[in-house]
Length: 315
Image (tube, rainbow, N blue to C red; front, side, top):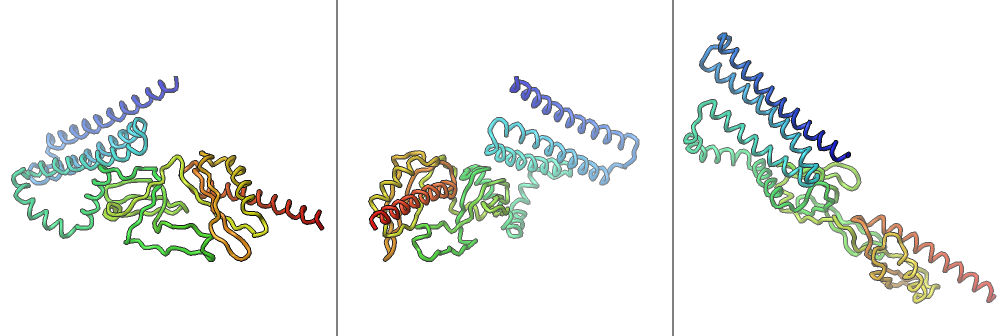
């Protein structure tokens, strides 16, 4: 019943929008007819100017209203990832058509456009090289679809350098860090791709940079997560590995218990470091790593307390 009511709402919304566009066109025709019937504006150059303004305003309103309806319907039918691409392509084509109509009203013939295209293209290409490269790159991104709206990605490019952090001692850090910017894609336009970074800020990257960047997609249902922990030498490594393997297989984030691996990563004079590899759910690493660390800390605490009791009973 709810699906049927939603269908009616969408049909009604589209109907109202189409009726509003028709009303705008009718008002424009009546206004245009009244101006020249009562000779408010004489024929000649003012007439062309009036036609240009009216056509531009009506065309802009029509593109805006139709664009909103296309976005609503496509978002519902295809999801937000596809709707952004459909809306961008519609606006690109619609504004080109509107520009051609405005040129036709002025009286520019197709042959004149073709004849002046080479010179105009050369001038515009030199003057707006960066803008045009962003637009062409945006079209390539929309067609190739290396990423979609609402995807979480990391893009790596030499234009935006980052300093890779290091943590002393080395074995506390991860084995590798991707020197890039990670976040969720919120919009893919003709000139910019907009990301909301993991820590909150919005970043707008020119498409000419995104098209040559290395893009790492984090849209995964599950992923390998590595966790490291330092353990005192007083605890038997074999016992630690056995207990942690049994304990961590029950962790809520571990989706494939048989994939769990507990290994000794490195040693020092007073301790050794274990690494825990497991396939965990979700596209983020921090939540499962935190959960695994909590279980490891609890298990190691129990082992230490048990060893203390054993030592006390012996003494």
